[in-house]
Every structure is written in C-alpha cells, then in structure tokens.
Length: 190
Image (tube, rainbow, N blue to C red):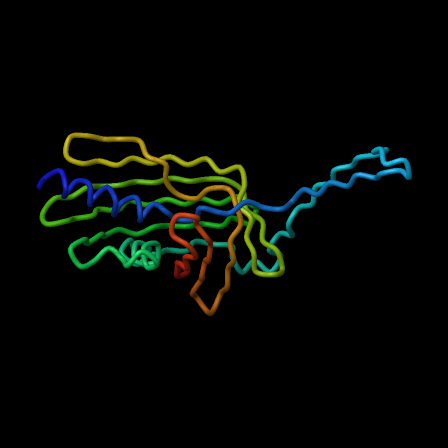
C-alpha cells in the first residue's frame, strides 16, 4: 500500500509540473528553386522571429495555485480526485527584455503520505500579435523529495508555442501536450 501511495504522489507531482509542453515553432522556412531540366539550382533558408509584445501586457509576475494547475493539467484525464491535495504557488515572470522565469514549490499529500516538488525554468519569450507566445532556449531543473529521497526531475516550461489571452488581471495560457491534449491554465497578476 505504501508503494501505491508514493506512485500516486509521484503522478500528482508529475501532473503539477506539466506547465507548458509546447509544440514547437515554425520559425524557419526553406525555398528550393528547380530549373526546367528538373534539377535544383538554388536553396535558401530564412528565419523569422515572432514580434515582441510591445504592449507590455504580458510583462510582470503571474501566480497560480498548485491545486488549480494540477486540475487544469489533468482535466482531460479525469482529474486527480479528492484524495490528492497539493498546496503551494507557482510564479511565472515575463521580463521586458524577453526573458522569463518560472519557479515554485508544491507539497502534495495522499492519505497521509506527502512529497515536495520544486521547479525552476528560465529562457526567452516572444509574443506575436495573434495571441501566441514562443518560448525558447529553456533551461529547467526540478527536484522531487519523498521522505529522505530527493530525485532530479524534468520540470517547468519547455521550448514551444502556446496561446495566451488577458482579461483584467487574469492570464489564460493554452497549449497542447500529446499525452493529455489541450490544457488551459489560469494565472493571476501578482
């Protein structure tokens, strides 16, 4: 039974750490010219960058509660159920210089057993006028602590694109993860 509890805790923390899986960006395009004889004569590759959020709407710190993020990340899988309770706050900061930081610590409890997870992600971001964010050059680290054991885990944001919308002090981030489908997380301006 103890092994089951630890496995459930590990699964709950894994769901929590699914912040933004990203689905890649289409920033490169290639063009090849073919002559009338059917052979290639020229090949070029161009790279375009997404526009920076010049309105500054995303710039600043946003927070979300652990249980809310777990609920969003697992909603397509039926949720985590009432037996799992997670506490803690995630912080997501978009800096005006095009960098971001995502940090947080969460404690999850299942039937009296608990585990602690911590994450840190840093990297670059750009936002297009169409409500898309591109995350790049991400460096993430995290730990999962259960009793005396501390394990490194992949955590936080990863390179890719997701949609955003802002309504007052609420930020909705939407992304698609191949393992869970489309996820929408809600963040509040700090």
